[in-house]
Length: 439
Image (cartoon, rainbow, N blue to C red; front, side, top):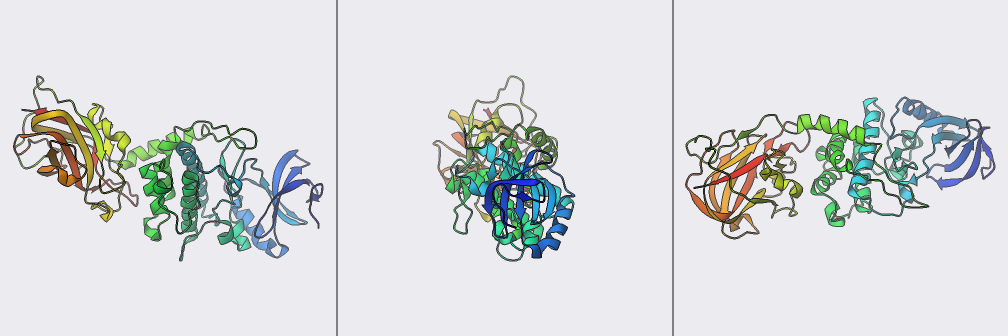
């Protein structure tokens, strides 16, 4: 039958306008005359009817706010009736990168939707800008679950990795590609630069996540749970963004309860429990400082001269605030910092030259190795500082090998330890608090 504005599909869906043309059919905005609601009807070839009906029956078993709901199937013409997403497809959006909190919220929603599918042994098969839609409140919706695969156009509709990959791997790769597009406003093609190069506002931890998500080596690609673990803290600060008439409004208030649940679960697996001071050098153990001896004031900054210049820079001041909230390195896939650099760490400015006899470092993650280095002037490389001692984080507090004078002190971490999270990048070092004591 001929379809156009005013025609009726399936005896009840009155066509209002064409939404888009797909590789296997057309999509129409229509009014459900029975329930008086706007729906989206996607047509497909009659030859694929059996495969599509099977795919729809499978997908309909899974319910999640991030999945576009399937309402009905029509026979004349063959079509699928979906929940309408008034914000349209990602493929049709022209506004470029989203703010980091909003992009994080959208990716978390999509990751949750894919996880719900995978838990029921269902895959989407075509995660891409044509199948990611938004409702009028800016909430992301995955449409066409399993349908693209049934129509044989999964690679045309969604992002797919090179080489062989399982259905679940294709979904995870597609999510990473969508995330790259949301954070940078650029398509993640084969020549695309790292996310942080494409868009300087991309946080380092997101840059690392996307680099692994889009890597050729499938074993390093992050899980859906890791996407949520990394991005949910960023999504928690999302604020409404009103784009005015003609644009959807992006909001993340609907996601906050889910983010809090994710964050609580993540907190239990990222690092171990308990705190303690660490052994420095090979000296003798000393008693705790007397109440009359106070730690020196200092300022802390992250130090990453062999990387992109930032390693959780926003956390650096926490190692001096007395709260044990602390700082940690990024996650890496090996104890040797993934072979990417020789070290990373924190540099402390004491304000003037001081003769230091003891440095106390508390950590919730033992077993990493580091060096203390010192200089009279701030340096740009680790070799600008003179090595005083090296140590392993073992839970004890010891003196430096000798009193050492200097203004700038570099905690240079050279080897990481497994944090027990079970992720693909489980190697980290963590510093809860640092205190310097003078002679």
